[in-house]
Length: 505
Image 1 (cartoon, helix red, strand yellow):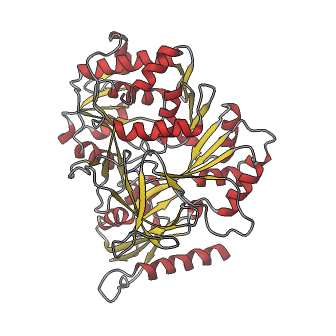
Image 2 (cartoon, rainbow, N blue to C red; image 1 turned 90 degrees about the horizontal axis):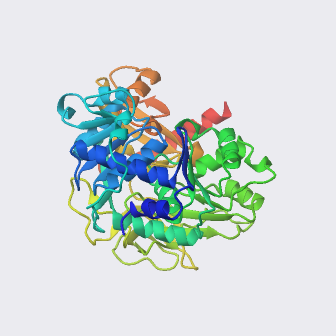
Image 3 (cartoon, rainbow, N blue to C red; image 1 turned 180 degrees about the vertical axis):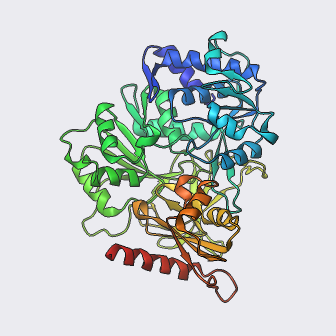
């Protein structure tokens, strides 16, 4: 069994059932299956073979989903790229994993496939750019693609995350990695063809894997939340009702906005039967309100870095009135084993804290271009505490990799981008607040007093939107600890003080 088989089997069972509804229209399982076959054959004509990587730089759409499926049918791996990301970062990703082809728009191709990337084949969804266009797909047969059956440990897709050196890291996920999580999630949710999944997360974010593939597994339908609607709270609430969404999965920030500004708690009836959240802690006061308002809905807290997809989960079944700590991240799932290691290398016991370690089928193959992970357990960098009921409570990060509005951000990535500015001598970035209130503050040692707007523009050319700093503070020198390292604790406190002062204005 490999990842592309879910769609193929559902298309055989229910070809006329709705598969995807997106900004560019709707498509049935039979239509999606045939389109994926055509895309696979068009990619073959461009030279794509088993084991190759194919970049997908498209807005969220039916076409993007079909392209993923077409790539998989060749035994190749797809690389989804942030549609709102800068061309510089896209070029870095395409070069890093040596993509054989890129599916994108003409404008994006023109901005990307130059000089050292001229050899990359391109299939444009509009216009023509040294390759085939979407309209050329009609020339290819929609009959099944024969002869490709990926092995369990073959690469299925690569998700690029923030890197500590300023260079994105490609997390390599195999068919086995993805299947273990998808099959667990389908069973835990008791998903059926009658379900309607929302797809809130962008395709380069690992949350989207559940939305698409659990739906394909059971023959349910997926409604794609358009890119521009992701944080438009009123439109999201209307979307749930209009699309009759039964299973919602997003970061807590989006749900909080929907409660506070979208009127979610004013709706008399909602079609939801399960709300899944991940990516950051859910503030207890907001989660309690939502849980009490929707008593018949299941609430599941899913946890796991991109390197493990979801490795633990916790179902909320009541929130004590006097509770002050976030709900736990729970116990192992997806066939994994988890434990916490203390600094002395021993296993954490009841009430003790340690770094969460994950071993099992969802642990990635490794980072692209680095030694494989093999069967070695993965150290998450997250500090957890073992509770009396054998659930784990998330305490914080071991390093400087943080979560900002659901996105994983390596502060060193932003610092590296800032350091490229000719007038910035040194920079350190910290995060204050959490969830929707999280803010990135850069402390900068500069030869001049640079306008905030110019620094934001500098970052926008190199980083995704969610990694652009919210505030910049100019200082004569960065504070240091006794061992010469940057005193980040002091800077974080200063950022908290700044945020508090601004809130009182």
